[in-house]
Amino acid sequence: MPGVISVDLPDGSTRELTEGTTGIQLAQSIGSRLAKAAVLVTVDGREVDLELPLPDGAQVAIVTAESDAGREVLRHSTAHVLAQAVRRLWPGAKYAIGPVIENGFYYDFELPDGAHFSDDDLDRIDAEMRLIIKEDQPFVRHEHTLEEGLEIFADQPFKQEIIEAVGVGADEVDAAGSVVSTYRNTDAFIDLCRGPHVPSTGRLGHFKLMRVAGAYWRGDEKREQLQRIYGTAWESESGLAVFHPKGGTIRRLMEEYSRQRHVESGYDFVNSPHITKSALFEQSGHLDWFAEGMYPPMELDGGQQYYLKPMNCPFHILVYKSHQRSYRELPMRLFEFGTVYRYEKSGVLQGLTRVRGMTQDDAHIFCTREQMDAELVRTLHFVLDLLRDYGLNEFYLELSTKPPGKAVGSDEDWGVATEALRTTALEMGLELVMDEGGGAFYGPKISVQARDAIGRTWQMSTVQLDFQLPHRFGLEYIGADNQRHQPIMIHRALFGSVERFMAVLIEHYAGALPTWLSPEQVRVIPVTDAHADYATSVVDACAKVGLRATADGSGEKLGGLIRRAKMAKIPYILVVGDHDVAAGTVGVNRRGWTTKPEQGVPLADVVTEVIDEVDRKGLPEDRAPAPATA
Image (tube, rainbow, N blue to C red; front, side, top):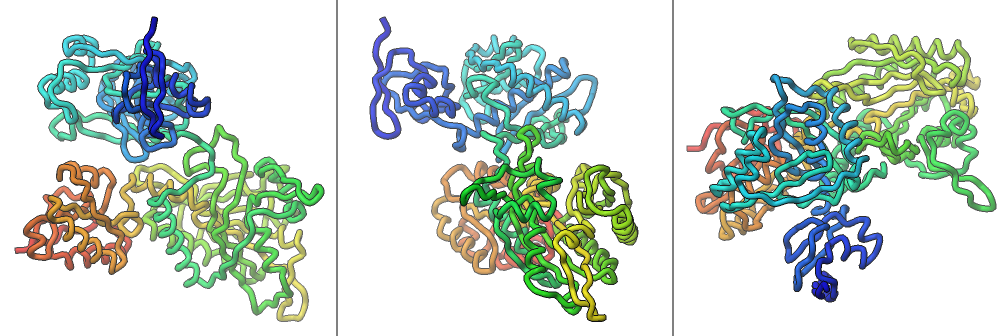
């Protein structure tokens, strides 16, 4: 008969369990919600698989997917599925390592016959991964002797090298050992791994493969050059983004600079509500032409229907219409960071690039017909200049015309509007591509298509010319002739959405954002605890001039602290020791540089350098290294 064991839980309680009870069974006994969310269990502080039996007398905690530790397991397990998918598609592929990194994971491969992944291959791999997830394959852990491990991975030289390193204590984490662990799936795929993993592949699915890069094995340029696939994975895919402190800082910086430029360019700031009665969207035409993209109505006040707004334009029209306008008030440029809601199908949601709630840097310009051409040129120049300030420099333009059967207004109005946009686009001196039938229901548009650092194209800003909504809302102004006239309306979203634009910038810079946009610009690392006070004073000196700096005095080994800061892509890593405390200096590691770190640099010089870099919106990599101080 099975015996009885007891385990201690985080709330201080003790549970008696049948001998052999696993972590997932414990979670089920606590509650079905906990069991559904659980991805691993900690036993006396050590992370283990949910399927392993719990030992008697252990301190036990169930870890769920929405925790930092839970996300690491999700990402590590997704990396395992990535390797499995690549092996299915390229049977002769050699697979190396697939660690978790900040907000994601990667896996390194050597493809047969010198083949290379292309960005187009990511879609094939993604599809194969989703098949593996649908198969709900269990992750089954086994332990092996070193000899058994070498035999299992006889055709995998990188895995063999790792096993040999374990045997002599050269592994990065463990001391010399005689046992290695693997995880096997039902289709005979096996990977060398410490674990833990989620119970089965069916627990995964909210992931995206991001890009392909090259990487040397062990980071040694004299070793094999491998193909690296980067990805990200999360516990859910709601389409409604939550910004954590670092993301919130990046967003604030993006918005603050945009606001500053709009003030300088003569825009007035407005704000509009997130929800309103259906009548507004009936008048605008959104309920006729855009209802499938809107959230369903809420019925209040005895049956009155309210909608979350899918666009800001009807509210800006209400601002214009609040009183009689004169031609002397035109052009009127209204601007808002307005959050809108669109019910995208769950299958098309993709991280920050395709969401259900987005904040648009939305502007609407009301002008006379005579002012229209100049305002279009002015607007497009403003858009391109501001995108360049964020580091995007390669563009082409796309002109979207009247959508057949899904538009309002006469062919004559559409023809005039389309020709005006075409003329404006040609003035920019950029390639112009036609998108027949791709316009909005109320007018044609120019889309700015930007290429990122590795050549991918992203739709960014849009400029739309609209004769229809001013007509539908009866907009007027009194002209110089003392007669009533209908204004022209220009819709303009510069970022497209804040969420999408942030995602594009992160992709463009591979996470190494320019110093002015980096949520943490400087990290100060004391060599020992004795240097912690000086490290704090360096942080304070940076903060006094508006720089974002932190000190990492966690007490880990110096090499590990520096490596962690580099993985976080901090622009400036400052190391301080005895000499620096005495001389008021710092050691400087600049992100991206191949030169050796500088020692004994006066703190004032470093602060000036970073401030200059922020002011010119540059990168540490753009600068030549300063001469070493004598």
